[in-house]
Length: 205
Ligand SMILES: [Zn+2]
Image 1 (tube, rainbow, N blue to C red):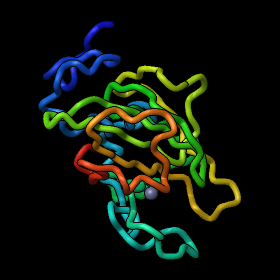
Image 2 (image 1 turned 30 degrees about the vertical axis):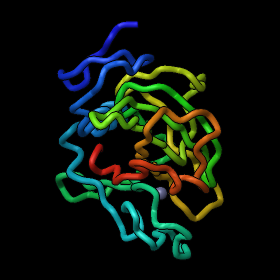
Image 3 (image 1 turned 90 degrees about the horizontal axis):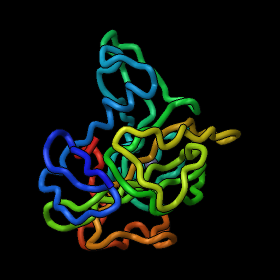
Image 4 (image 1 turned 60 degrees about the vertical axis):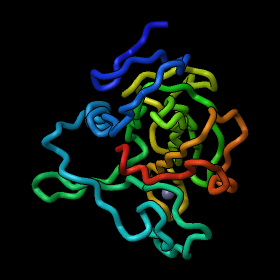
């Protein structure tokens, strides 16, 4: 298995995290998000976040939403604004790329679609960075144990159907002392993992 370069720095083999990535910093998620959705960097200025969309927010942001049972386990990416101030909403056609090279650990249902759990390799503290991409429809053929490359299309957003909740990406980042296994992580138990646990995904996207 060939090693690949992360942001021109450390190298590691996606299927064998033997090397440490001591600079596992902000991903190129946004670059790849624009590329995969045929957008120019000039089309994007910043994400728009309503109260309830950010990490640990307690309110919900969708119409008629009740307060959350648990503080928000990640961030919700739903809309962005371009440099002219125009607001763009993600849709069920929006393509979601992988933040880094990684391995598909699990694909499971969530209340709007599916969630994909990827292990993205160790941080310098030895913790394994896991990302959960939620409310999506996985790319055809994507399966547990697949390795994916940084920027590879993982999914499109789930069409949320009759729900009042518009399509959006829920992103969680979970730091664990070892790599998770299939079936181990579910939304009901996601607050229980230590050390590391859930961290603010905006540090990585
Ligand atoms: Zn969310």
